[in-house]
Structure formats: structure tokens, C-alpha cells
Length: 445
Image 1 (cartoon, one colour):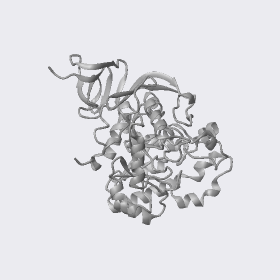
Image 2 (cartoon, helix red, strand yellow):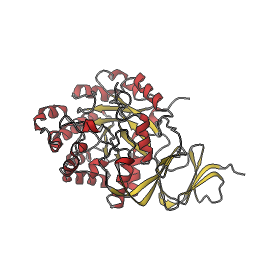
Image 3 (cartoon, helix red, strand yellow):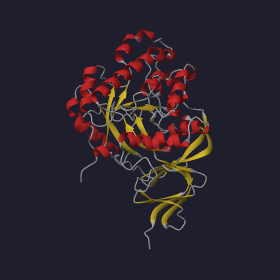
Image 4 (cartoon, rainbow, N blue to C red):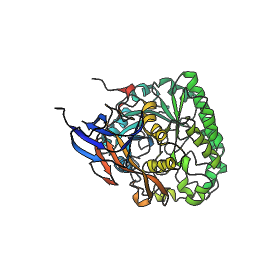
């Protein structure tokens, strides 16, 4: 007699590499063990998913959970709680904490702090700086490392690498794909006079599309010269999307839900500094070109750039207000609403939120619903209408730019390695988060 499975999800519509079809999924020892009509299979538990859609677990490859040093606005537990309540099963967290994640010791401390305290699986970017260049070949392959992250333009924190000399040195050292915040620091400094005190509508005027394009062009030119793979984070301009269409051999592209959903000047007039981001939310013409990049396959993945600040920090008079907004909990519902509106297919959403991250970063055993893979599932009700409220947000700061926005499509279940961690809006399992592993940095033995 065949051994029983631990769990079978029954009656759901599964979206994976061979289409969108109603089928059952079995889980054994945290991994997918069988897919198909499993009515005759034995399992310790069955969960009825009739009317629901089972997606590969959503991986958010850009979040700022602020621990250590900035935990008055977020920490690894609260940020990951927000993630799983929003249907996200894995996150890559950024290095601009206090202290910065730039050494083996600071990375190991984060890994230890996240283990079985975070609710989802995780990896951490290591900041590339002028000071740690020689250590990069080791740092990028340490356990829990998502790779190297470089700030070409200044944002929150002090990890700026603005000059081509040090960018070249960093690129020469990497073997994995490295990620970059692309805004030209020299242009940002030269244009500080464009900021209008008290008027956040001037934010995209100061940090204009040229600043973004210049940095992206510089990065791609260096990467091509050195034969390296780079990842351009949070693309915000149409010019960059058109440029990167010609450079897909070296550069991959991330877009964010807020750049695809919000637009200037409307968002600044409604939300004020709560719409302030780096790079900025821009006008409809840029947003439409970003959507063109999604439709043409130029944009590879979605990342929320979840970057919480307290209301007090956001309420400072511009430009003294902080740049950043929450996003990890709203990534799935805002994008499902776009799916229902016909802006992208559900299969394209899966490609950008699970299969895409696994492909770009060589994640081991995640990103597909396939036998042998981790049993990470984002279960959604594509017909459910909900109004996003600040009260729903689990982030420590307790606000979202989408407060009061009604969406169609909602996350109802989050499974991490076969464990049901969220169901119908409630946490159901104590935190079980573990490090994500990568095929180009696998542990030995």
C-alpha cells in the first residue's frame, strides 16, 4: 500500500508551467509529491479549494524590513507577517539597515534573527560598497545571501556607490546576478533646487526620468563591457523600458505595483508625501510604457519595494519627508485586480511573481507547482471583492497608499513548505521561515 501524503489540496484551479487546469496537489514532507486527479490517494489532511485558484508561492524580491536598527517602523517578524497575510511565501530583504548588511557577520546575524521568527522563507541582499569589494565573491554566496545590491543613487541609508570606478570593481567581482537602484547621483545633486518646499509634486521633477535613464545606461554599458548579469530594480520610466528592450542579454527588469497603479499628479494630490518614493511615481505616459514593457515581456518580475516609514516621518514637510511606502501585503491583491481588469493574464502574473524570480536568481526548488518542489502556494479567490483598509495592514506602521481602494481578486491562503500559515485572513501556524537556497550557491554536503 502506498504511503499516505501529508496533505492534498482538492478541487482547485492550478496555474503552473503547463497551463491553468483544475487538479489536486499532494504534499509530503514539505514538498509537492503528486499532481492530478487524486481522489483515490490517501492523505492525513485534505483541504477543499473548490472555486479557488492555486498559484506557485509568490516571491517578493524587494522588501525593506528595517531590522536591525530601524525597528520602530518594521522588523523581520512584522514585515513577514504582512507578507503571508498578503499571500507572499518568500522575500528578499534589502541591506540598508543599521548597521548595513555588508559583512559576513551582519548577514549571519540577520539569518539567525529570521530563522523560525519570520513567517515566510527569506534571503537577504548584501550591500556592495567601496569598502567590501574584495569580499564580494565570498559574501554573495554565503548561506541566506540573495546576492549583491548596489545603490547608484542615494535613497534611504548610506550605501551609495555613485562612481564608475567602484561600480566596475564591484561588477568584476560578482558571479551571480547583482541588483541595482539606478538614479544618477550627480544629476540628483545638481537638481536639488527643483524641490519645492511643501509640494511633493516636485519630487518627480527633481528625481527626473533623465536621472534614472543615465544611471541605467551607465550600468548596462559597464555590465556589457565586463560580461556580467545585472538586475535593474523598480523601473519607473518609459525611456528605460525602451532602452532595456535592447539589452536583455545582460539586464533583467523589475517593475513595482505602485508604479503600475499610481500616477502623477493624481497620487501626490490625494496622498501627498505618502506617495513619495525613490524612484518617484511618474505620470500616466510613463505608467503606460511600463505596462507596455509588461505586455511585451521586457519586464521580468514584480517586486513591492515595501519600504515602511512611520506616519510622523511621512508627515514631515517635503522634502524633509521620508521616501517609501508599504507594499508587501498589497502586492497580490493590487496585481490580481489588474488581472481582472485585463491588463495582464493570470499566467503572466505567475511568471512575474514566482517563476520569474526563480529563473533570474536561480532559486532552488521554488517558483513552480511541480513534483519535488517546495510546497509553497498562494491560494486566491479571483472573484472576491474587498476594500483595502489601513486596519488590515500588519506592517508596524499601519498604513497603505491603497486605503479605501476596492479590488477584485484576494489572497485567501498562504502555504510555506506545505504548512498552512495563513487561511482566510488569519495566521494559522507559528512562524516557520527558513533561508531560501540558490542553485549557484548551494551548501555543500
